[in-house]
Image (cartoon, rainbow, N blue to C red; front, side, top):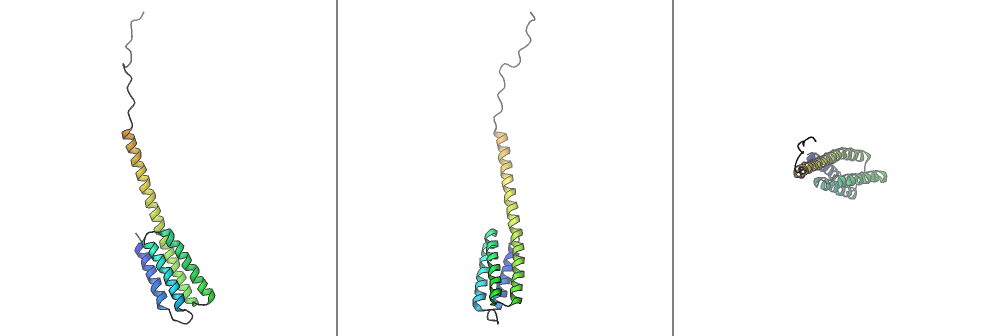
Length: 139
């Protein structure tokens, strides 16, 4: 699967965030909050909980936007994080779609196997006793 690219993107995003702590307009507290959010996204993705990862990614996006509005993050850094979020979101959506497809295929296969099993276990209708009567004397 593509879990590794998501994890790699999340790690890259985290490294990018940690590298800018202490820069003008980007406080250590802002960096820590964003890093925590990135860790949450990566943890959910690593556990194949793509729905939770997408929810947490949206929270990270809101945090990034709020920090930009407050002026606690430089516009260029905000934009770089927003681009990373978009890439991670695209990966997560693909992973979620692939997992859903695989789950549906497995369920369909299971249902088909159950149907085949029911066909082979179904009782055959009983034969009529005596069969057809031979033609009797005309009379």
